[in-house]
Image (cartoon, rainbow, N blue to C red; front, top):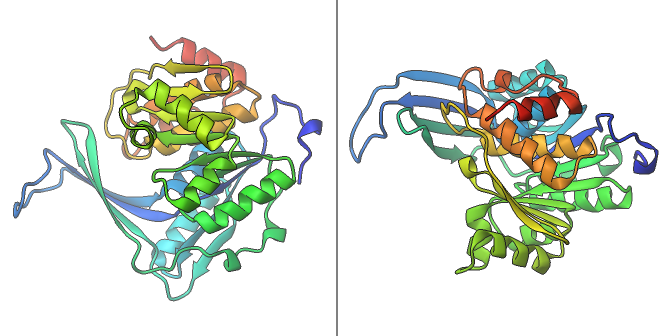
Length: 315
């Protein structure tokens, strides 16, 4: 493992991502079909996705050296995911292949006029990634671990490993299971949807709720994402709200993943959590602006100074 004290803050740190892999089948429609109704797709795409894959791609696109721990099937879709990781230069030795497994599929329906989406996940053809499938001694040296909580048992072990070697831990979760609560408590920076944060403290506004949950979990920093409205950042000393960036929204697929990855990259630059979250807002907005060209709208390997300039140009 790399000793953080010997690293220069303005250099890209290596980032290890652990999260799910899938293939997204995206249908763009004029409106969602009603019960027993059929509709035609205006556009269709089929490409690798899943939260872990998306976060690794965005981090690599922004210039980080990335590795992914995940699981795919022994089918053609598994090959498709691995090929996409290779295209972005992402180390995939930690991606387990289940020979008799079917890579997860996500059917995404995008309502073009509303720029919203509905998703159906199929994970029935593969077993969840288990801790006994991972050799922790082979985990790549990493300064940052970005863990999405989908494989809670594996992520808990990785969080412990990161802490033992003075690496920073960023955790993003979408549901508060008991294992995810334990994982959240190990984070240096915890990222959660604002709706989940408020569900933990009903009746409180988002800023107060974020502060209360951060204190309850004992994490240094908690970020509550609010979609187009930006996010709130709760730390030991302050809780503040950051506005989102304007975007010509095509759909919101992968926007939250882009936010988490960009925030982690900015933390690797040595930025404060609030400034890193602001960059996450910026990149998340860019990810919403295209379907086929989604990741190409994200800046390619910007320096920290260039990233600041890009944000300052948006009004």
